Image (tube, rainbow, N blue to C red; front, side):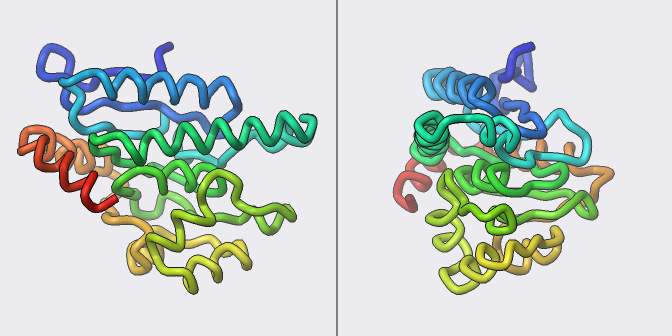
Length: 212
């Protein structure tokens, strides 16, 4: 099964989804990296939706058991590759939207933070960076991107306590851009993406590059 699949086959291939899994490992990050490269060079892919095929979970982050069994050098290279992959999302002059259909914690939130916009389903789960409860720190960009998004003090509070937020709390804090009803979440996000894809995509691209 391909990680990247076009949503609007037969049209302009404007919105494209990358399907996440509950926990990610090196194989999934390679697939994500390849999908990003594919979309970078596809002129018809204008807005990219990053979503999950797992009910009630966007992503719970890296596979903890895999990391526990790994040697320090492997862990370092794994984190480095994850960082490089997420940097590609942030640096690609196309709009990436993280559609959070469920829990989004740890490395899962770090993936979402690399996207340009985050949208979450109401009553779908919690969101945050609880790595401190495992005695580690966010290792794939969270310590940089979260403070830039919501401010240093709020970000520090969330990371040192490991506190998880509801969708409404995340919206109030500016961590997510929109919270949609769970029943209509997929269509609401797709509608937003379609409207952007049919709009002045060149201008949107330049705005993203100017802001970042």
